[in-house]
Image (cartoon, rainbow, N blue to C red; front, side, top):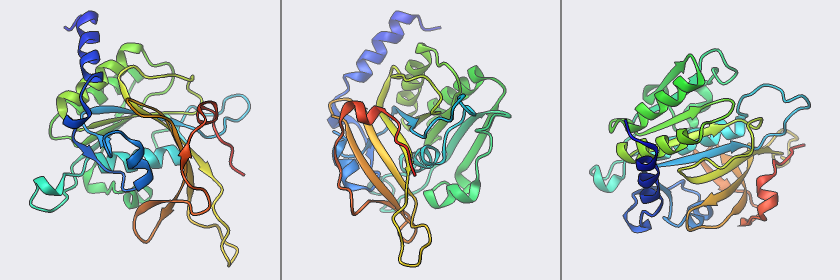
Length: 267
């Protein structure tokens, strides 16, 4: 059993990690990758995604929205793909473990929707845990396993401070990536141990000449990044390339801190 002081010391060491020694995986969206001090998402770290969807009066269901879930899937798929330079010039997909609370609104992942984002059924393992504490435990165990490329976890309700630190250390030990996806109804928080904190919200799609909805759009905010600064983007999913593109009518820009933290409303 690791005592709290030892745990804190290990997290401080992790937070001081030099940017040059961190292996990375690109999101393949140039403005997003450039905003990260490492030129991409660092491996062996915890990444926090907050759902920026509007919250209905009364709170609604405690679950993540589609934009945040899709961004978490995309991030996990990128983190869990090998570096071609180390695998004979071929980027190889590694397994992704997705941990949810059994019977919760989050326990309804839609496979055909995740596949275009890079999470095909053959590489995705879903763990349905009976309690929030069990979800955190499953995340930690999966993140520590060197054969797992990335782990995504959806933990409803309050999150103990020590949980984020333990997840960060587990990701460091396993060498993959851990993604903690929090619902819009969760309290505003900064997860201890998280290397990056993002907010993802749906946005109105661009109009098309034929009057149908255009490609899905998300508003992404990088709210916290070690050695970096907040940014805000409008991005659009490109079905043809299977990548995100920066929306043509809204260039990326440094985010106003208060605006970045506030969920955006879509029409």
